[in-house]
Image (cartoon, rainbow over all chains, first blue to last red; front, side):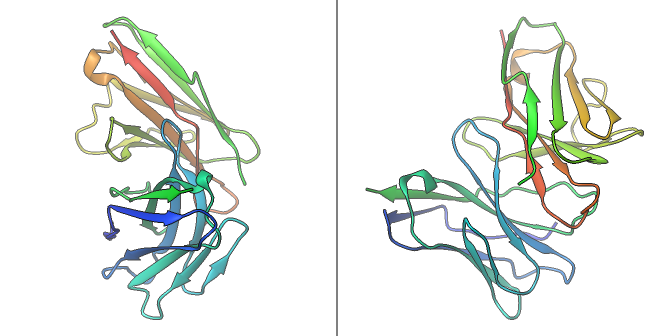
Length: 110
Length: 117
């Protein structure tokens, strides 16, 4: 599986936007970019995924670089409930399991 | 989004006993389900891929005779930890992919906390 690189932790203030970066310079043409988040003692929660174009959903936006070697998860207005570990994962779909890195521990200050 | 459930949510057992964990896709069919485990302060590690109607495929280092996987229907996969030992204590998480949308993402269950005494 292609590897991703994320900052270990980030801190933001409540009600402000958060930009979580992810580098994936060895991404292949068929790899989707998936974002999940995990709260303590819970299973990962799907956030968003994309292939080439930027994506928006009710939870977040995903901005994908033109060369696809990096992407940014955008939380438009962080709340305390957004505090979690965020994982950026590459996957080709089909029958592949996901390879989780260490993710980014997002801390939200009130 | 799609819902995946796990049962039980937590289990405590004695060393040497076997424990079965169920993973169900509630509103979609899943020809493929995945089992992960997560030790404290670590990330999820893929253990095996569960294929409906066929044998599971295991990741390197995961003993297939110890972690028995059965995927008897399109909505249910079970993981049985046989002869459990304290080092098997972990957070076990399953995920499933919608068979109708194989290129889409995986949906995860809430996890099962196993403690072996």
